[in-house]
Length: 305
Ligand code: 13P
Ligand code: SF4
Image (cartoon, rainbow, N blue to C red; front, side):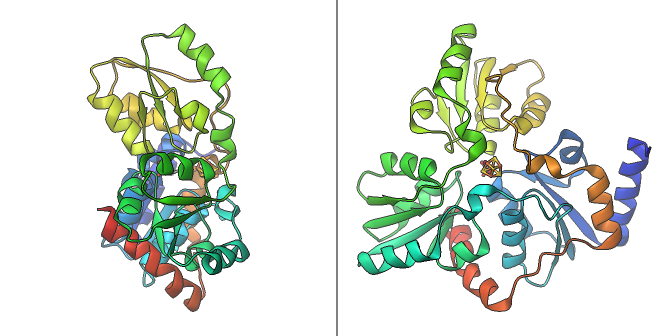
């Protein structure tokens, strides 16, 4: 069995040799977040991927994140430690439906949550993440918004931007869907003074109970600045690592129903080491797809800032 220190030292050494930088999402395992150079929410990671100097990015997250990094930085090598780590929601829309909506509505913007395949992005007008969706949708000139793939985030944005007409798609995150109102009510009964922090991928009935709704980074930031010292966390529990690091004296509760994204948890230190050692698995996208998917991502970086 390889010891943990040994593994970390080998990763550090190879990272320098290979001119690589490690990016990680807040949902990956604690020890992977610990060795990463940059940890953040989806928007931050897309932004930072365009700023790093290193020629290789090791992306500890799911495939849409690595794809976005590659689309934005075609000259860099982007490595995924586990190429099977994929977000199921990223595939929950179809090109046929997008094309149909485009032909049915004259003045429509296809707004694509970054949790989507490169293929879906390539047929969209602009990408958004949970941290910039409100800002970006408000700034669009179009009256009609076709929001893909996530219906829950779409409905949340629609409520906040009533001046626009939304068309929804039926995609969802299976992990956030399991975080039910019933569980939240029970948890709130145990901890009536805790503030409830919820990711907008949760269903509408759950979101109604929130004191704060936001991205993973938004949730961490809110809890860190809040005067309250106990919180019910309604998202994937990988965020606890940073929440506890930043707030060692605050208490964080969960719904007792998992709140675990198995795809994010596929990334291990061993796989990060192998990725660096063997230069795998490289994100490769065909040039036409890459160029088409670049426009909506670039627009997000511009409008979302
Ligand atoms: P964030 O952009 O909030 O980090 O969310 C990513 C994600 O996959 C949520 O399930
Ligand atoms: Fe996808 Fe849900 Fe996992 Fe986020 S938590 S990566 S939306 S499956």
